[in-house]
Length: 158
Image (cartoon, rainbow, N blue to C red):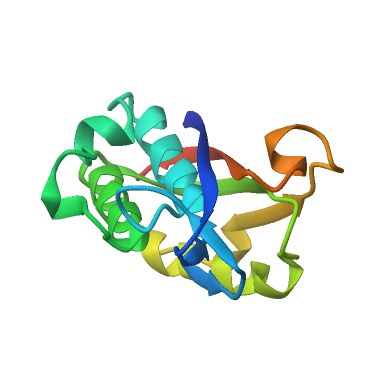
């Protein structure tokens, strides 16, 4: 077994789409970043890289490479899943968390879980997505950005 964890933070700005867990969520602001800036998917993908001791997303998907500009982060996650399988592992489970003041995440969580299960070729029962607010405190509470966290357990294939 191998365990990985990661945190990703992106600023909320006008003129961008809000995409989290591969779901486009209606909102007046979106996340700023080189790709689609899906902080939740980035945290999950990087947790997998961490469990494999392969470094971070910036190493594999640099923000100065035009190939990754505007890319759907589910593609990045699928690439990390490929690396995981190549090295003889599968996902035991993933536990993820979105910290965002608005909008509400509850209506979108099941679709996020399904997107992750599809990208990682596993049953949705292995994927947890949770959300909480900043209660008006800090950059999350002021609606300035999103913080996402992920922890994964990888199990060796038999």
